[in-house]
Amino acid sequence: MVAFRMSVISLAAVVHLTTSTTDFLNKLHTLEPSRDNPLESVAGAPGHSASQLRKDMPEAIGNAFISLASTKDSALATHSVPVVKCPSDGNGKTVTNGSRSDKYVSRADAGQCNHATGMWWSDTVAPAFKYKYEVVSQLMGLRSGYRVLDWGAGCGHNLDVVAREHGFEGIAIDLIASNAVWADQNLHNLKAFCAADGVKLPFPANSFDAVLSNAALYHVPTKKAQCGIMRKQILHILRPGGCAWFGWLGSHDAHGDELVSPEAWSSSDCLGGTDAVVYAVNEIEFFGVSEYNDENSYSLFVCKSGHTSPGAFVNASGSVEA
Ligand SMILES: C[S@@+](CC[C@H](N)C(=O)[O-])C[C@H]1O[C@@H](n2cnc3c(N)ncnc32)[C@H](O)[C@@H]1O
Image 1: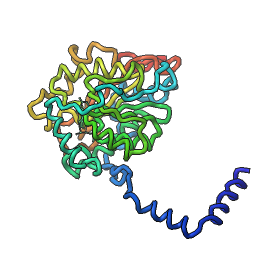
Image 2 (image 1 turned 90 degrees about the vertical axis):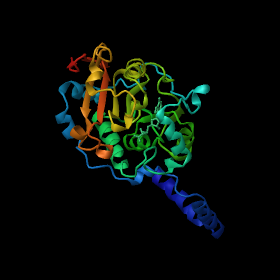
Image 3 (image 1 turned 30 degrees about the vertical axis):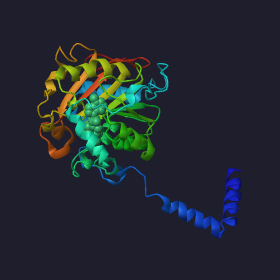
Image 4 (image 1 turned 90 degrees about the horizontal axis):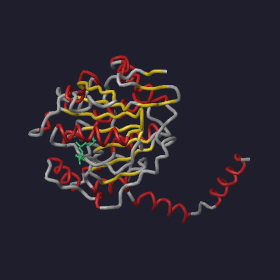
């Protein structure tokens, strides 16, 4: 029946494809250049595969990822979490707080979102960040039915690619309001892009399954403030069993800001006192690749403990107990 109806429709289309219709379609085609995500045309760097990374990572964090990937208790499915919307109050403006991230305002004004490199200042780094978003999405088993935040998303290119690839609901935030406008007009796979300061997230508790973030948290100038974001914002908006990845920390780009060492995250004055699994690892060693091949850059993985599926519990050391 469906096949019959379709053939009737296509026959009707052929019959009505007059010269004026063809002219109209041709005009439509030439009205706008392609408005697709410019990162789509870049190949990801040849880093280590997700199955290799699984073998290389400690059991605790590996188990937390398995639990995240296999759970039926996604933020969308449970926790009665309302639809995540961008705030309509004063939060939707570019925050020019005098921090070094103000340099991104001028890059946005110069039209950088139309290029695959986005907020970065080099054409060579796009393969590295494209690979990292893809392989971390695979590691975490992100898929349809999950809701994922990109903290400091830049133009939203990276989240848009993996949201399309894996079918999850992607929500981006960034300080730059014009990036949110650009993303609304040009990207097709994001649920929302909020112009907001990630120092205070405008989302309710337990509303995300995962957080992805790359080369953004280090712009927050002090260790105390970065730890505060992880403890009070990220662990708050993640649902129990949810996981976060913060890439390209510790890089040379931090300049005068306080460099947070990989070890600092699990110390008692940071995430040590929380019931979360914490893993920090050098990016070149772990992924086999990093932007600018920066030897100091590292990735931080944090999984919030909790009941992740009926009968399973991820404890503070990351092992899953039946
Ligand atoms: C180097 S870009 C990285 C963009 C993207 N994550 C990527 O890997 O391509 C850093 C981004 O972090 C954003 N950012 C810095 N501090 C932020 C904050 N407190 N809240 C939200 N975004 C922030 C900047 O506006 C900028 O777009």
